[in-house]
Amino acid sequence: MIKDILVYPNPILRKISKPVTKFDDKLHKLLDDMNDTMKNSKGVGLAAIQIGTALSVLIINLPVIDENDEDIQKDENLIEAINPKIIYQDGEQISNEGCLSVPAFTTDIKRAKTIKVKYQDRYGKELTMQADDYMAVAWQHEIEHLSGHVFIENLKFAERKKFEKLWKKKQKKKK
Ligand code: CO
Image (tube, rainbow, N blue to C red; front, side):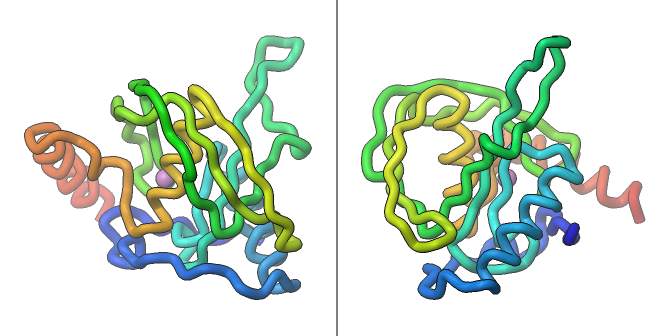
């Protein structure tokens, strides 16, 4: 089921997500709803808190280029991560990020280049993954949501101020 995505500065986005202890139908429904919602908005990642559920759950599905040179998302590439934790990080990269909770805005953010992450799948099975480049960015971006943060909080003071000004203007226009 497609859910509404909370938009910055909705205070629910600041909530700290709690660890999942039950790997039951309710969790599976949450994961399926998250995937429907992410696909519907053409996102590449989503944290549960973005649809208002403060549980340590995120999904990532990076597009691949198909034979017609078009970006497509394949269901088999979907990552479902419960209780994820970064256990190692190294290097540095800057890439252009966006977020479904900050629609139609992108900015360059500095992140680790390589990470290792520990998490559980929808059945509670423990997994680890090493991620580099844009996959590492996606993990770091989504994990940040679980601690109540949004990517624009990484901006330097002046850039953040600029963003807030622009965002306020945008929000006003909508009303
Ligand atoms: Co986001």
